[in-house]
Image (cartoon, rainbow, N blue to C red; front, side, top):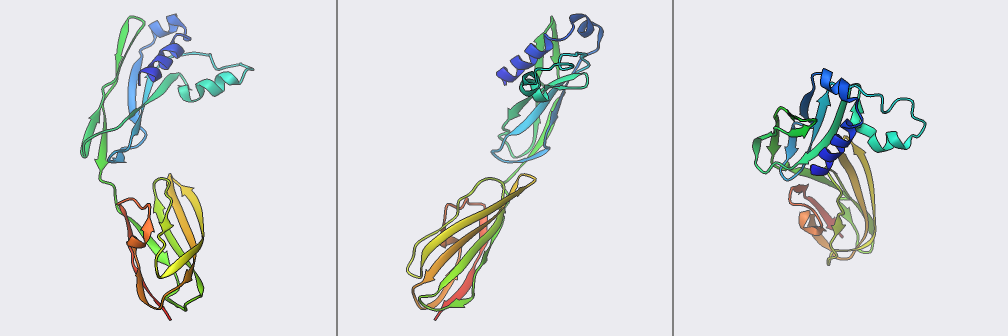
Length: 214
């Protein structure tokens, strides 16, 4: 947080001191999301509103724009800090304060709701029956907010010969399909369930599938 605020101070010194003195400045805090999962961080945007500056206008050196990027919009300068609320339910963040030019600017508080990690339901897609020696495809399909590597455990029922994964991301959610090529080894009626996979977080639930090997 300190580094971010130092950058904001650096930017503000590029402003016209007389313009800053004449304008009514306001430090405003907003969150990029009003609900997060327990243990996750939330970004808080701090905006010092009302500063006029042409620092980004007419520059041929684009590296300035690349470096400062998101830190100016219209007549405002802004930066971000990250917070990790540690209590379920309603959390009040802030106020945030910046001291500069002989003045102290204090922001409003913001409210964030912290919720438990919701269950993620994954679906198994596979043939309901097969024969010993036959190779079948088992797919595990689901949505997960993060990266994940699913692996089928080696067992007496089948041998895993191949594995691939396809992922698409929409609104920060990973839509993933793991595909396993397995060779059936043992006759009987079995249940494909969560215990047959490794590397699955606790919140992931799998609907079991019953299949028969003849």
